[in-house]
Image 1 (cartoon, rainbow over the protein chains, first blue to last red):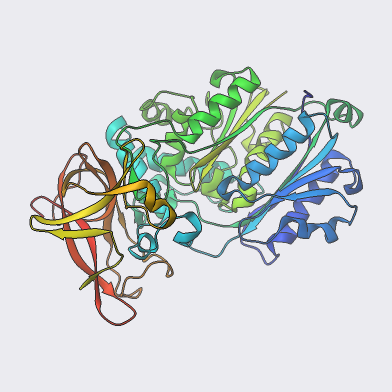
Image 2: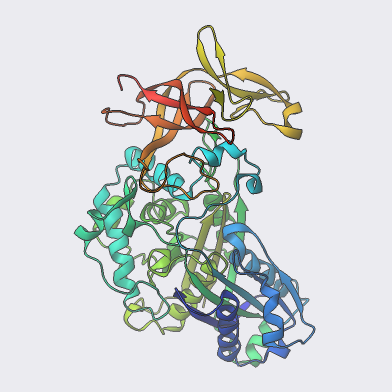
Length: 380
Length: 136
């Protein structure tokens, strides 16, 4: 099995734009190629996806009709993560030397409104107004707060940190700081979460170039390894989005399972990670994911966050570019943005948001419908 | 008034009951009773009308239509509580909740009720299930 290197990374700023989702993806693809110092015709295989902005292989006429093996990936909120996983396997197998991963999206404003039947659910579930992602996230953190002693103030501090970090991230969407009191006192969306505690669907594109060790050395880009990548779907007993019923006997979350698998692949543990990008669909998700991914015990987040542990400069910096809260969530690109941000951090190019002390390893985790999580670990 | 969907709940002499499904091979209970091809793997089971609050939130914006089918428009929309109720020894079900003035907390006793929800395509009332907090 071959080692896998990340030799190029590109992004189109997240937010709201005139450009189509596809064009934002192509922008990111060209940026990643230029960053790696390769041409599109050099790419041997490519994996890409969007959730709401069309087929990723529509990028081919724009990038060049080279006959490349391009595979469209559609896997809900793990679309970007699954495209990355596919390219990782392709390089790791030894079959290919150079692969592209592409993700982009452009969502309508407001909450997602999937059709119940598309997810194997009865129509009445949507008709009664119970099939909303925001409700799930709010219900999950509401119970978690009661069981593990997390305060509303801590929820607010997660959002405050996101906007403060995004000030220094050129690709972020919401780049103005928001005061803690304004976050806590803002319009309630789904109790206990106010509008500043939720991310919004948005637009953007992100791309990565993966290479074999020989190709990475040839390019002078053999610094950053993709040490582990795994995704997992829901198992019995996990509390998932769009669940009309749950088992009384509780089980592990997909994030817990993907984290364990990725750590095993990398031969590393949570304490080895220097910079973390954790799915923050809302403030509570970041808090819960800290524990689900193994970075603390359930309930420890309250003291850690109050002490600033997750801020840039703290011992476990989380979402250094403002995460989904500040970047929004274009589904196809969101997981790749996390990896892009870690590449920037490991290269030491984070500017005002750079994690000090030469971070050697970075961790990403996405979570989403219908109950899946994808994790990557990169390292120098 | 007819139910918003068949085999969702039934009326019994002791009051309404949600219909779950008990899987033949392992006895596991799910809600709702699966329909279509999966129906063959389950036997209908009347679920307990009493349970305890497992989690909750309040839906403060009108969900998009489709799929939401409430009669009211944006202006007439009233926030509603929604969450999960644990039916002891059976399953945890998601439901709209009526909390009244009762402060929600984990373990709050809740009971099943059938209430009018919206008007169907033919203009007739359709009913849905909710869980009401004891004392609300």
